[in-house]
Length: 248
Image (cartoon, rainbow, N blue to C red; front, top):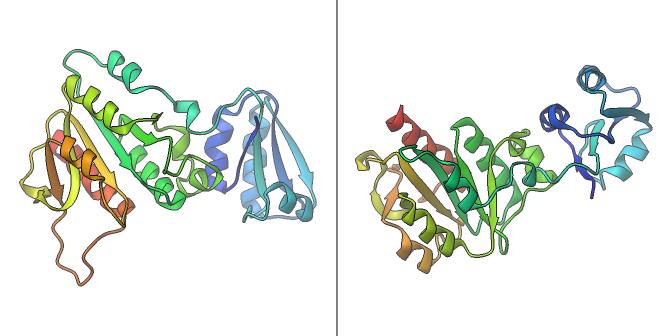
């Protein structure tokens, strides 16, 4: 099944790996940004360029804000997540015996904007794998790709039916599991090992009780403002930065 991508940055990334049969639709009479995409697409001989009226692009984008460009990936392509999709077992089998890794586990992140922002941070801080439940969770779709500025194309992802089973497997493979919680140990007082997995829950309910019980430790971000919590995507960036800072 073909997939559509909107957003200039997301399209730029998509064009780098676009397969045969991909089509870049451009609205006639648009500006320099659209021209830059056209030039990039001409370098990828697998992608066809079609200039259409804005009303036609509106139809293709199903009302989304396309800003004059839409990339339709060819049938060879998988979704943005499956282009980097693996399983937790395959991921662990590919790790060297003494190799470290940073895994991000998302428990109930249902807002695609939050997922997109988290994947963008995951790409910037070289997260080794992002684990996403197959149910009751946002999945990598057009909105996620756009919000992530194309980072969803590059982050390894495992979509799993049972999050807790995968956590137990990671622990057997030498990972220490850290759940983000308001009452956890201060982030600044936590030393992260070379195989670390961070669990983030939804903004409303946080990490589910059973999942939190599987965590080896819980950590919190010290705050001094008037609001008692951070947006989950912001929290993800702070946590990932601190782990990578310690591992540098």
